[in-house]
Length: 162
Image (cartoon, rainbow, N blue to C red; front, side):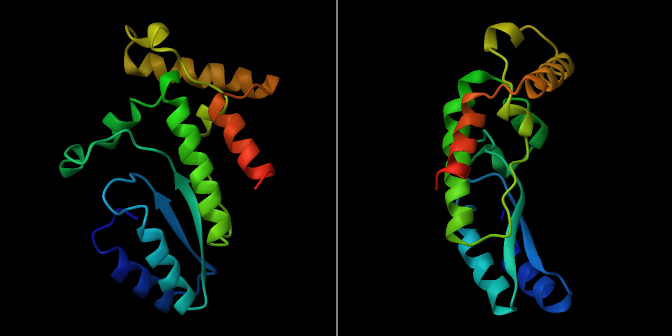
């Protein structure tokens, strides 16, 4: 959805390949990137194809930052629990959008955040590599226990209760 030539790419790809559906990656959502899903669905439908989303997450980026994008910088902002309300809203909105467009499927990209976030206090002094390791370990433990974050619960409810 963020590619400059997204329409041309989608038209050529859906017309010249034997794919079953057009797979989208949704991040960031700045500018008109989210609204482009409507156009991409129309392009896919014109070739008898549907759409799906195999990667989506709410990049924490400003419009100005996207002029010189640095995905690692955006992703390094994600581990903190104070983002859970925004991530929850994004997951619910994307689940609704997937239903509206009758997508083949919708899959959030950073599934660790469905079971784990770190508080800013626990992670503020840690190097980013340590934050990622700590997040992955805690996420594994929480998955085994069946623990969900606010975002995980919101996504589960959006799936089960359209």
